[in-house]
Length: 253
Length: 212
Image (cartoon, rainbow over all chains, first blue to last red; front, side):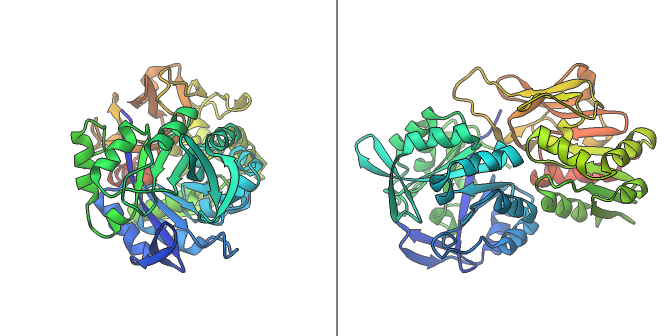
C-alpha cells in the first residue's frame, strides 16, 4: 500500500534555511545540507528544498546547494525556486533533484510545464501553487512569494497545469502559511478533488493533528511542514506515530 | 570491477552515481564510472541504465548517442554482462512502451509498458511515494530483503509482464504493480534504489556483488 508522505521543507535564502512568517519575517534555522542530512537520518519520506529568493531577485537556482544536499541524502528531493525553463529542470535533475518545482514561471506561461513534462516526464514536474482566499470557497493564485495577485482562479489553474503534464501539486495556503493554525482544508480538498495527481498540503501546520486533517479532510497525498520540525517542536517519528494512530498508512522505520 | 552508469541525458544521474560510489567503496576493487562512451561500455564489467522521463524521449536519447545503443546490446546480449535498469531504464527492458506513442524497447523481458489507471478515483497518478514490496521470487540481488520493506516509486506507467516468473517483487496500488523484474543476467527495478535509503543501498550493494 502506498504510504502518506511527510515532507520537511527547507526554505532557503542566501544559502541558509529560513522560515518566513507569511513570507515576511525570516528566521535563520540553520545550514541546509546539515538539515537535509538530519532529516534523512530521522526518517523523513522526502525533502523539499525551495530557494525563496530566487524569483524576485531574478537569479538562477543554486545548483551547487542542490548538489551538495543530494550528495548527503539517499532519499527523494524536490527542488524549486526560480525555475523557468526545461534547461533549468535538466540542470537541477543533474544536480541530484528528483523533482523540480515550478511556481511563477508556470503562471506566466503554462506551456513551460508541457515542454518540461514532454522532455523529462510528468513524474518529475511539480507545480507549486500559492493560493489566497478571496471569497468563501474561492481562491486566487499569487506569485512572487505571495506578493503578486494574478486574478487566476486556483482550481482552474490546477486543472490547467495538470492537463499540461504536471505530476504533482505543492499547494500552499497563503492565508495559513506561518500561522500554525492548520492547513486550509477546504482549499486542499477542492484542489485534490479537481485533479488526478498527488497534492502536497502546505502552509499552517502547528499541531500533529493538522497533519492528520490534511489527509483525512483535505485529501492530500503528502503533508509538508517546516517550523514544527525545524524548531524541534515535534520529530518526524512523533508525527508518523500520530498519523498512523489516526489510521493513515505511514512508513514506519 | 568496473560498473558503468550509462549517461544518455535522462534525468538524475548524480544521485545514482553517489549511491553506487557509496556502496562500491565498501567492496574491494570496485569502481563506478558515469559514461556515454561506447568503448567504456565494452570494457565495463556491469552496466546500469538509469532513466527519468518519457519512454520515447529516453529511447531516442539512447539511440541518438553514436554507438551507445550498439555497445549496450553487445555488452548485455553478446557478452552477458550483468545489467540493472532503474525506473524508465527498467521499462526500457520491455518489448514496447505505450507512453504518448508506441515505441520499441530493448525486448529483454516479454511485456509492455502501460499506463497506471486506478479504478478508485482517490488513488492518484503518478504512483508517487513509498510502497511496501511483496517479494515473490528468489534472486541473488534481493538477498536480505523481505516483504514489507519500503521502496520509493515515481512513475505513471507500469511494466505488464507476459511471463510472471520474470517478476520478483510487486507492490499494491489498486492491483499489483511490477517492482522488480529480471531474466538471466538482467534485472530491473521500477523504484529508485538510490532514493530508497537503506533498502535501496542494500539492493545496489547486492547488484555489485552479483556474479551471474
